[in-house]
Length: 424
Image (cartoon, rainbow, N blue to C red; front, side, top):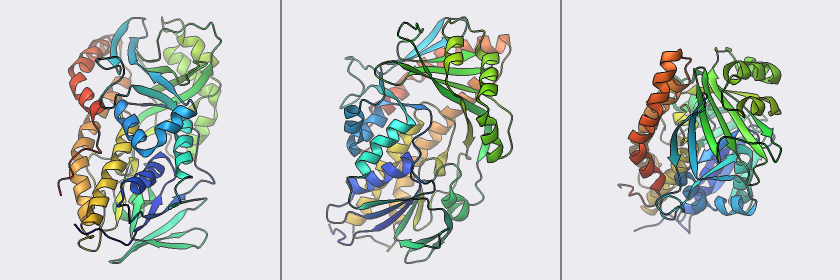
């Protein structure tokens, strides 16, 4: 087998969690004598360490462990271990449980992991710490890409400060509103607002404050779903996230304006969930320090992910409503893609451009993404406003759905994509 001795030069657009973990995966899985030179471009003055709290499932934590991030998370005591996700109706009864403890109580898979509820900010800070140790990765902030040009020999970007950068490969990890997709890879594939918005914030709770859940809970009502979860090991703060139907504001500036009025958002959440029979729900909403609006956008199920030298990863390629594994899917994307690219390099880079690696990656990931997309549709239907009968049917369907899908979830949680055959 011939190994390429020339390191690739790779541009990554997007300094969020997808772009940063892609840079780490490309570094880790590259041939040892051909570690790529990576330029990471972030449009903001610094990577954004704000946002809500995400549930990292066992397969997601397994990928972070491979990339060296999980050790930092543990050292910094970021997040709260989750044994199980509890599901309640706001009338007070427990509907179902999704378990992460595994058969021996230590987690799922090999090595075993439970789940972790962690703020997006803490997750990003952990990845940034590992990025700083990689001499082949350069992160440049405050860089807005104006244009992308691809030739037979390279791909280049021009930034708003007049600078020009060229590379062998460009990775579009720049989210749902991806410049890489909209300007170059698939301009016709526009994002669409789902009609659902996540209004979230954090409530600092007193020591004697009683909650109805052990770690994390989904609470269903007739007018949406409200998530309540600890996100720190000391259990001093509860993440409150209300998924609910909100009319389209029509523009990103409009969403920012609406999101800036935290008290109006709080009043809306109280109208939807404030009459809950669960005693802690109303006080948690009232104690939440601020509420931020996060409109949920999606892309069509099928679409173009790549050209000869550009590849979309994460939300730029397949944004969908949150369905419990979204963040873990992104981590798996980065690892599978990096392994496919490393294999192409080991073969001597046939064809002169990485389309062979791109095609192998898409064969592996598109079926998985299609399944996840179908699962995400259930989220939208569960959030829809419903009358008494519709809500009753929904609370009956949720435990049945979790039972019916338990085996497929367990397979996903056990999976380690570093061991999956690449097929070429």
